[in-house]
Length: 328
Ligand SMILES: NC(=O)c1ccc[n+]([C@@H]2O[C@H](COP(=O)([O-])OP(=O)(O)OC[C@H]3O[C@@H](n4cnc5c(N)ncnc54)[C@H](OP(=O)(O)O)[C@@H]3O)[C@@H](O)[C@H]2O)c1
Image (cartoon, rainbow, N blue to C red; front, side, top):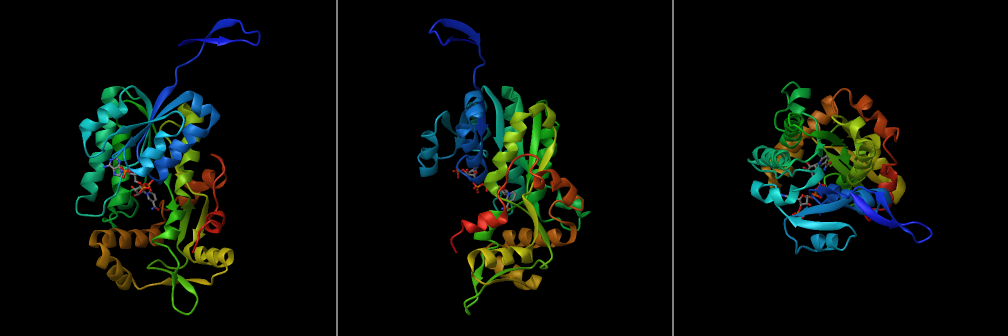
C-alpha cells in the first residue's frame, strides 16, 4: 500500500508501507487469548503490523467491553460452536490464534473437535494465511491406549493433525501445566492445624512442566517474529519442570505458610471429583496417572521443553514469581 508521510522538512513524499494485517484472536476474554490481545495491542512493532479482531460470544460482557477500549482492537461476535458465525470473524484475516474449549461432559471430544474443525474449515474458505493453535499431546498414543479418557488432551492433538492437513501455514504451542492451577486444582487448602496441603493422586515425585497461561503470548511473539522458520513446528511451553512436591515447598517458602503435598489414594481422589462432575473426574484421574507414568509431554518431555526452559523464545515467569503474586 502507498501512504503519504512527511520527512523532517515537512515535505510530503510517497513511501511504500504495508497495510496492517488482521489478526483474529479466539478466546480473547480468556487467559491465553487475552494475553495474545495484550501482546498485539501493546508491543510497538506488532501494533503497527496488526489490527486485532477479538472474538467474543457476548459483546456486553465486562471483559469484552474492556477489549474494545484497547488501541487497535476491534471485537467481533462469534461462537466456535456455530460455524456460520465464524465467516465474518475470519473474513479478510491474515493470521489467527485459536484456543478451543473443554467442557467436561459426554460431548467433550465431539464438541471441542467440531470447534477446531469449524474454525479451520472457515479459515480455508476465507483464505487465512497462518493459524496458530494451542495444542496438547495425544495421551492415547503416548500411553499406547493405556489411558483413553484424557479427552481434553487427545482432542487438541487430533485438531492439530487436522489443521496440518489444510492448505495454509500453521504453528502450534503445546502449553504445559498452567501455574494458575495453583489457584484451583492444585490450590493449597487449610488442614485445620494452621498448615496447608496440596492433595492429588499423583506421586510427590511426578514432574510437571509449569507455565503461566498468559506466557502463551511469548510463544506467539516468537512465531510472529519468524513465521516461516517456525511454520509447522510445535513449541512446547514450560518455564520449568517441577516435582509436584516442590510446588508445595515453593508455596511454603514464598508465602511463609507451611504447605505440604499429600498423595491421595486414587479411589479417594476420584470420589471427591466424581461428586463434582463424573466426566471431569474420569478425565482428571487418568490425566494425573498419565503424568506420573509417561510425563505430561511423554517420555521426550525434557528435550521438548528445553528451548522454552532455556528461554530461547523469550522471558517466562517462574513458579516462584507467580506464587509471589498470589493471595492465599
Ligand atoms: N489448565 C491447564 O493446565 C491447561 C494446560 C494446557 C491447556 N489447557 C487448555 O486451555 C483451554 C482454556 O484456555 P484458557 O484458560 O485460555 O481459557 P479460559 O480463560 O478458560 O477462557 C475461555 C475462553 O474461550 C472462550 N469461549 C468459550 N467457549 C467458546 C465458544 N463456544 N466459542 C468461542 N469462544 C468460546 C471464552 O469466551 P467467552 O467470553 O465468550 O466465554 C473465553 O474467552 C482449555 O481447552 C484447556 O484444556 C489448560
